[in-house]
Image 1: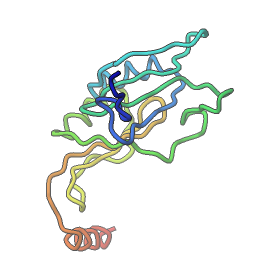
Image 2: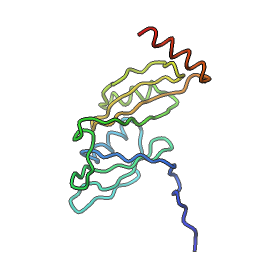
Image 3: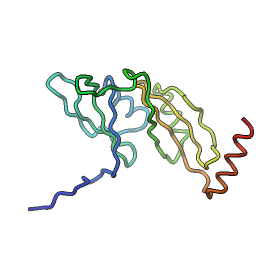
Image 4: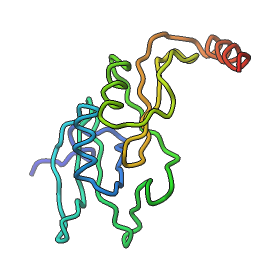
Amino acid sequence: MAKVKPIPEGYHTITPSLVVKDAAKAIDFYVKAFGATDRGRFEGPDGKIMHAEIMIGDSIVMLGDEMPEMGARGPQSLGGTPVKLHIYTDDADALFARATKAGATVRMPLADQFWGDRYGVVADPFGHEWSIGTHIKDLSMEEMRSAAEAAFAHQ
């Protein structure tokens, strides 16, 4: 008998799982905004998506419809989210533009940041926040501290 891998092929140690009000529309949005690939969906008897998976770059993201009776509520029902999902990409400008063109709202404009990334934040139409970045400069912790001090001194 073949041994089952404890972490399935293609998954990482941490895999985000999102709850959204309309998972089917969210999947369509993520395909359009982030170039996600729809890996499949499992619907319950009521037609709600109980489990779906998309792939963004080399990362799987699980998602499903809100099911308040099971304690599963999305950011719109909760009045916001304290969580950001981060996407590293070769071209933050292109992905940021793609996401906003698809309907994401800018929360933090894309700009070169003191920690060495070109970075910005968007909110999707379902209430989840996504930071988008391209690493543009390697910095030591001391260089980052100095850059942070300089950045905060100008605020």
